[in-house]
Length: 265
Image (cartoon, rainbow, N blue to C red):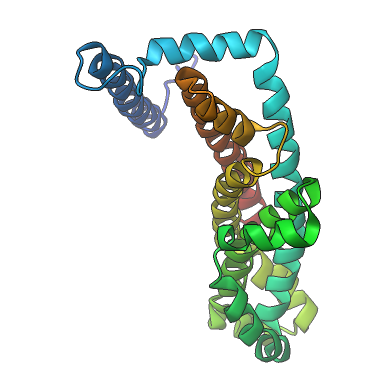
């Protein structure tokens, strides 16, 4: 008699748990949207200053159809991704070096302490004065804001690798390069990606502020222009787009982190 294959209970439970989490998350978002719609319609807040979400959604669709949304979104994405990519390429290798080599740590840590405690937005006038109102100042500010969470998490990740793992690897005859590549680097991946995700969120925040000064395109420019012209639904449509962009960034990085965690294991 042929065996009958039945689905495993753990897999079923895992799927049910995921569906439950998704349902709870969707319910919270739906409740928020309902409250947003009702509050101005019931007169609890002046609809001039907080239009119903349906009006914001209609404005968002109009911006998307006439191309303004995609033009500004494209400009913001180009700046954010450029600054973010440069920050990753600089901060991850530098953090690995500082965390692994004591001499580099002793030499660079005092300087890093000075700059990491300086808010990026406080330096916006400095970047504008030195680099002008063009793309260079905006991308440079994003790089500055993104470098620190990546750098500090990378340094911490290397320093907190279990010393017993390193000692065991050395006792098996592993050289420094092998210990670093096979023990330290894989063990550092989760903490490094935590810093990268924090930097991605920071890049969006700094981007908006940078685009409000001298930009001719971008989501920050769209929001600022709408606020200046008292086009409130357009302003909220821009804010919603920035939120969606941040969620997309986080989801993409979470997916990459999941794949790298499989490599790590």
